[in-house]
Image (cartoon, rainbow, N blue to C red; front, side):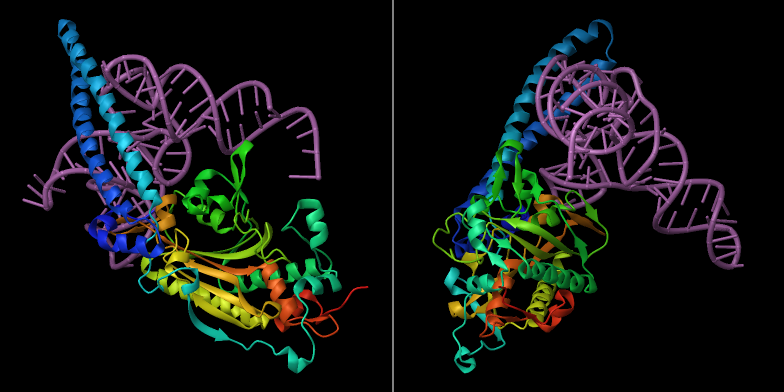
Length: 421
RNA sequence: GGUGGCGUGUCUGAGCGGCCGAAAGAGCACGCCUCGAAAGCGUGAGUGGGGGAAACUCCACCGUGGGUUCAAAUCCCACCGCCACCGCCA
């Protein structure tokens, strides 16, 4: 959630931010009005409570026949206090619920517009020209079959559409990618983490995933657990209700991720680009708000380093305002070149959430003036299926074999993935 | 899943229904002492919120949420978590 003070001080900016996100700017005025009402009610209640406290003390001190009339008064007051308290907390809840609907204040540097209005920051590498190589590239599903690395048919048989098995070299490829990612993250100073993937509602809410993104999370009704769509959730909630005294803190979480992919019927139905379950190594930073911008660029750089190591052509885009998550003020995506789609497709994403998540999760640090909410940022180091797609398609040979990127060889133990009989 | 015990401030740990935002130790910060340090002595530190230009003042917070009461850390209920033992189990 954003700071009400910020809204009160600069309602115009808040309204403008809502507008470019495609969200309702009227919420700003509603929350200000609700907060005014809340304050008035709170003042009334607190005055009554102060009076009650005094009276109550005098009851305790009174003796004999002095007591009865005082008790009488106190009883009457008690009812009033209760009513005032109920009103105050009702209004506080109302203001809070509006506040929770308001998205983070967008970075004024972010491009304005919808999904199509991103700005390309740079291209790295050149898409391979298969006409020069003299063969038609196969898509990852075919290569996956040839290598006996990906089995989408049995995935569908057992679990339904958008499920798959990684087998043989496919499975080993995941381990190699994860090991490479974790070891480079560790070298960069990240603490590796394997978090829980079932979380309670509060953790989900705190990270901002139960609002607009709610339709995309799996929920276990009976136990009221949510399956996380990214380890960002348990990593952010890791320090919930804590005051941190050492910043920045950087974590690299490795976990399975679960996504309902509601509303994507017919989109990416082939292969493993869009699936319900996959594994991912995610970077997560807690830092001071004033360092967030620089940290965001650092996360992007680590993502680029990884892509470079995989020797895959890609471009970096600055995602437009209307396409940002509720928590993010700015987001950079890396899109890898996918030859058979003749297109760049998203493989990583890094968001600057400033204090938005930390305020909900109550994560602070100490300053001379008191405590302050920290900033949180996240970035994908590697999302396994999409990285596998990119590797298989970009590094394939005419015979169906696939060259393994140099950086991965020590982790995989082979230079080339060979067709399996 | 069953039984028993426990959840208090940075930590340990007291706490009779009103005098408890909370004893006492440790730790922390500052000062004195010292050539410096330790010890010793003194002083000061919780979090969130309302009002106020400010000094300041008021409210809330003793796992969480309800309840009883004029008044709850203290009584009652539910939930959550931790510990121990038993059962089951990868």
